[in-house]
Image (tube, rainbow, N blue to C red; front, side):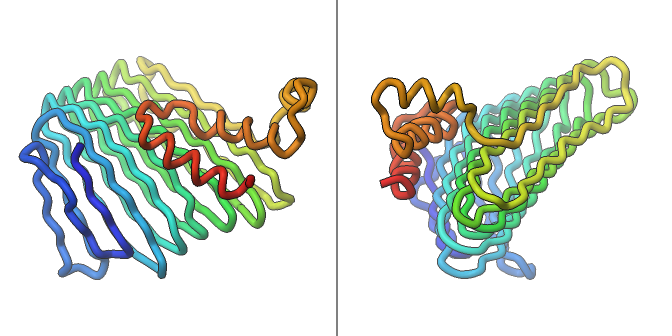
Length: 263
């Protein structure tokens, strides 16, 4: 698998084959990493921030290409801007996990060609303020977006998801889906804003937003099997965060992060 490590704004290319071209732009105010996907491939990016970091990452998918993208972010305060540009018949599967003290992340998706698709799965454990703005533009007919955001707020965690999907008139037969859920284990306010801006009738669009704790039924079931409250909570959080993760190495890395909070 292709692999990039980013420590603060230092970008280290660990392994990158000819399926991806890479340009690092240091001339602008914010360092920018531009990745162009030429053929079907997979990529793992590991971010680690130990001081305030500002960074932009741009992914461009050529026509008829498929990318599986895995990302893990850890560390302290960061401001990240990510752009995904998808051309005709391209398919992007994103799986992201964050364990960052404070983050302000802006994600923009442009579905620019017919039958371009994004499947975006995001997970986070929040111990401080986290704000995520996601904007998805269906710029062509027959495009698809599935956005799933799962967050767990603990300690002093505060999570805000602001998710906006746009379909202009004339872009027909698009599929637009948002699924957002926050498990709030604090007294802080968490927020979800699921926005659908649809100007075309011939579109399938749906969204959901849920903020709360795990149900008493779930906790009771586990405790009735002899599992104490702390371990029952950890099992539920593991299931919530690790669902949808299809790569065992990534699942193991995330599982270790979860266990650090519930030893």
